[in-house]
Image (cartoon, rainbow, N blue to C red; front, top):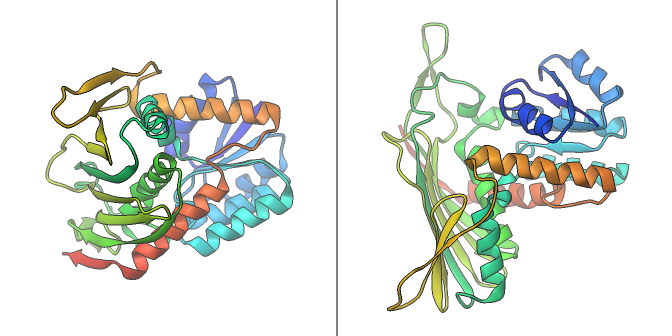
Length: 317
């Protein structure tokens, strides 16, 4: 099978090798070259993979759907929930398979944690606490990720993943959300000797409430002064689960020694999970079966982010 990837950033550096590992023939085109995008959508590709910036998602997804092509779109799935719903509805009207690039579901430890929650290993899942701080964006030049008008911001770049992962773990829908959006680096080099103002957040603190009464809090930054180990804890009515990394987790109960679990899986961190996800997409394309995460899950994440942005306080330089 052949995939046409739109976008030479993440699309070329991560998606191309992931598809190649799964046996695909891969063509990559720049997201800004409209003629090239139209050509691959009308060409012989079996799947169009959209990995352009968020402000281009809608145009590229619609171009593929207009030609009756199945589509894999990256998060955050457009710049807002209205765009996400429009793309989702168009995919369903076209009757094609549609996939959303929420590969965090494919970390072996996350899948195991979800299984343990379903089995009642910690009773009812009450709350999830998640913190993660890194400095990857601290020294980077200004770009679309720092421009709110282009769909930039750490909430969309990372929070969309977090929202989907939490929906996956809870097996439930979000009914309320809010938070704080922070900007730690307010001015960035513009690549031409000057500086540009950041209009999008590089950090956030968000809370989520689920239909069944569960809650979650996520505190995350990507322009922090240093990298810190992530902390991820699922708190239940009869214990807790702590996720250490992509293949290790622990069950913790009152006055008992932790039960440490090593999960069989590809490992390899992010790229291992991404390759697993592309493998699932590959099998779905062969069978014609619609799988999750799909455009429906992209809409759910976009709606939660719209709720957060609508009521969030903003702080920073």
